[in-house]
Every structure is written in structure tokens, then in C-alpha cells.
Image (spheres, rainbow, N blue to C red):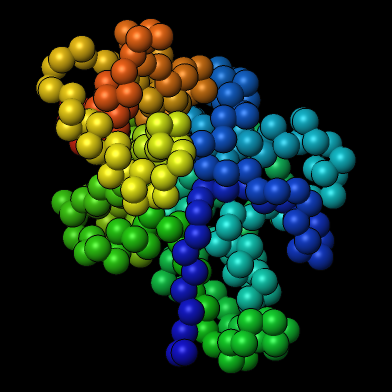
Length: 328
């Protein structure tokens, strides 16, 4: 192996002590909505437009900054021992190389701590954390360090193997499927839905997340839904718990086929973190839950099999076709 690049889930928040030991389980990306009060507080304090200019995106459950504030308030014993704050990739990077660093694409998800204009942490961290707790920022393809002898012994990698900064899994997957130039877009279905489009210049639009791309030059405009594969997986467990995975999904497909289009229509809204005010914005707030209507004791399994999987397949279209965003 000539070199190693890291991709992992994100943006996340993992506090570690001075020795690099995790102090609690990591706090995940937008599916974790615990910091809704902190989001509201920071938005009221700073103002939506100021946050958009500073961070390139509105504060949502995707943002790490409010989650750090939540950690400091709700788990003070852990916070008092927190020497560094990691995402998944930076934690792996430090374990492999001893370097405390993160890529800029990931850092943009740490709103409102990241300054989109300067490409670095903001000079004013708003009392959320100290600069010493935040990693150095690099480009994803930069060599951040080399595998240490200790990491080599633990992993079997050769000592001195170069390790790049890496990035979030979705961005790495975008590269793997061919995103190369502005205009290229990836629509990724998984446990959630995630959309990445490369742009020549950074866009300013509160309906989107924006970030520098993995190397100097292009930017990324992104959006995501709160559920996709998790919904169909839940539905399979509900309607076909006695079948294995392949048979269960085949059963759901057959059930859906048995329900003619438009008959006994079931409307479903599974986007559990969409805004009540602007529902085309993914993961905008934690105030909404998924719903289906009309729902009754007589609702058939064919209606559920037909109605529930459809919204994730079509609900990204308002995101992919927004009104023209303002240039940054």
C-alpha cells in the first residue's frame, strides 16, 4: 500500500481527552436532533442572514456547533475533560498519524464555527469552544501525516505510509461515481438521501448546505433527507418480519404492485427533520415528525407498501430544482 485515504460518517462530534481517549459515544450528523434549542438560540442571537454569510448555510440538525454547545451544557463533567473535538475522519487520522486535522469540506458542517469566506475557523467562536479544541484544516487530498510505529503495530500497515486528510463518506462516494467538474451531481440513496452538486463558485442559499470542495477551486452545494433506506427497512420489519432481507423486500414489492395507482391514496411525509415553515429544506429543524394520512385501522398492507417508499424517491426534486441561488 503506497498511501491511505480515510472516509467516514460525518459531520459528527466526538470529544476526547488529552490522551485522545473518547469521552462518550459520538454525536451523529443531521439524524441527531438533540441540539434543537441551541440551534434556535444561536439563530436568534446571530440572525439568519449573518449565519448564512458566515457559515454558508443555515443552522440545522446537521450543524455541529450547536451540538458542541449542547454537550457543554448537558454533560459538564465530560466537557471539563474535553481536550479536542473530532469528527470520525479526524479521529481515525489522529490514531493513525498523531496529527489533529480535518478537511475543509467536513469543517463547513461545523457551522457556525467555520468561516466560509476565509476557509478557516472563525476568529469569533461565539463562546462555543476554544480554538485549541478544533483541528487544523487541510484539503482532503493533502498528506496530513504518516502511519506511526504504534499504529502500524495495531493495524498491520507499514510504518511511514502517507495518510491524506480524507473526507466525509458521501463526498468520497461522489468522487468514486465520477463527480469531476462543476455541474456534475450525485444523488445518493442509503439510510438517507444525499445530494451533492459541484459548482464553479460558492452559492448562497438557505435551502442548501454549501462547502468548499475537496481541493482548491470548485465548491459543493448539498441537500439531504432525513430518511430513505431506514424507512423501507422499518417497513420490511413491520410487514414481513418472518422473511429474510431479500424475501422481505420482494414481498413489499409484490404488495405495492397489487395496489393500483391512485387507488385508496395514502399520503406520506417521512422527512422527519423538515421545517414546518419551509418543508423543501431538508433537516431544517427537529419540530416535525413523519406522518401518513389518511391512516386507519382498516389501512391495508398494500397501501402501506405502495405509499411509504414513494416520498423519498420524489421529495428531493424541489431541492434539485430550486429558484436560482444568489452568487456568493
